[in-house]
Amino acid sequence: MISLAVVSGKGGTGKTTIATSLFLSLENAQLIDADVDEPNCSLFLDIKTEYVKDAQVPIPVIDSTKCILCGECVKNCEYNALANLPNQILVFDRICHGCGVCSVVCPTEAITEKNRSLGKIFSGTNEKRRFDYGELIVGEELSTPIISTLKEQIDEEKDYVIFDSPPGSACPMVEAVIDVDYVIVVAEPTPFGLSDMKVVVETLYQLNKKFGVIINKEGIGNEELENYCREKGIAILFRIPFDMKIAKSYSVGNNLLKTFPEWKGKFQKIIKEIAEEVKNE
Image 1 (spheres, one colour):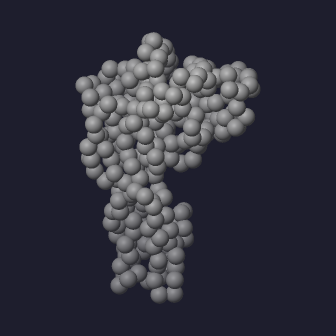
Image 2 (image 1 turned 90 degrees about the vertical axis):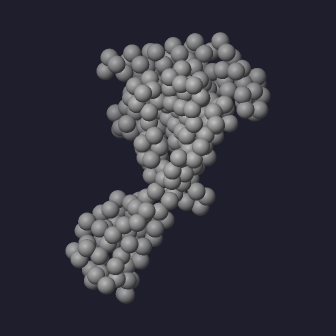
Image 3 (image 1 turned 90 degrees about the horizontal axis):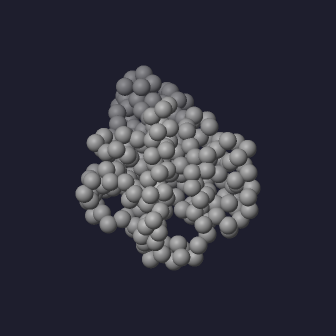
């Protein structure tokens, strides 16, 4: 199985368009929409999904009869989710990441854990294609645990699994790409597009990930993005032109392959080349 992640420096670059196009160009594949704040791959797929389970995070529960208010849990919490008050340890469960360090360092074993739901996981199949996505509960702040839960849904029987990652380069994006074989960066050839892509590229270098770039809306800006890729030795996998026909088709929920069915072979070629590079590694 080859695993891919489609990322972008900002929203609106065409990440979902590329992810669904790659998915629909394959037969035995799985698509995971890890953009859990606003999952929208389902808008472009004819796959019915059903609820599977909740995505949960363990949060501390403090037994006041055992707690001696030593503050060790507070000192060791990297996320400042605990506060030492005169008469109690206060837990801020909405910023707790569920790492469990507090229960480990507690000298009196006063801390246990209970699960708190952050979102829901959905799944569906259509022939040999499988689609999964996560949905963050409105008002919740932590999306990374949902992405971790989505990874548990990976079907090892598939030839390919594709992640539609959250935009940007923060923790949710890192969680989505950390285990994949290859990353596809979707970027616009504009000053903002290049600036945001540079941040993503530096993150991928830090993670030691193999990656290439797909330029979307080619012709809308200048050649600085291509010059940057050339200087850095970054492979440009594909160029999608700035075309009103694509925009109109997208606005009514049509996938890119429905507008340009002849591009199916091009996406298959991209995936084949990526698979060969991964296998050679």
